[in-house]
Image 1 (cartoon, rainbow, N blue to C red):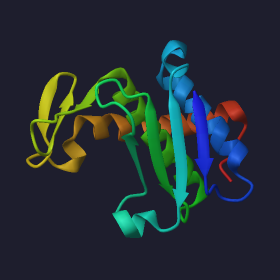
Image 2: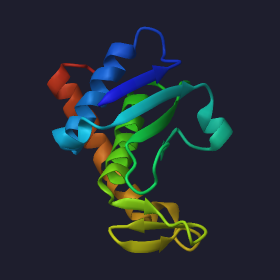
Image 3: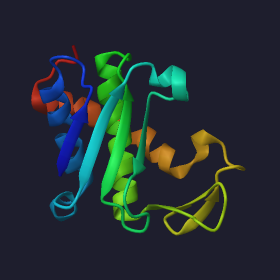
Image 4: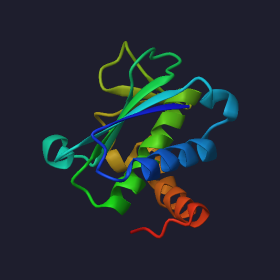
Length: 153
């Protein structure tokens, strides 16, 4: 996986690079990873501007995306940013493996495992892709800390 970082908090790029690689290898096959590119940008006040601590979107082909952009809130604390990165990497996996797809002929809809989910009629916390991402983010972060000897500070 090729990873490009922009506006990284000072002195943290090696930790974020290691975390992104760690999460990717826990979530996806080596074969898939060879073809992925992920741009990770840190934005001051993203939570205030967009109402979210992070986001992920594909930036190439909606059918089989291999290029992704992740934005994280640079003003969040370090542990939260690493946890948010884990969450967004779950979304990279979902897009890249085809678990989640855009539905171009329907406004406000996504396909999840072949089923159309009407996002206008479904609460955020009930989106199946968010259930998975929220369910895995903490465990990925904890395993990263354990296996990299990162102490969370």
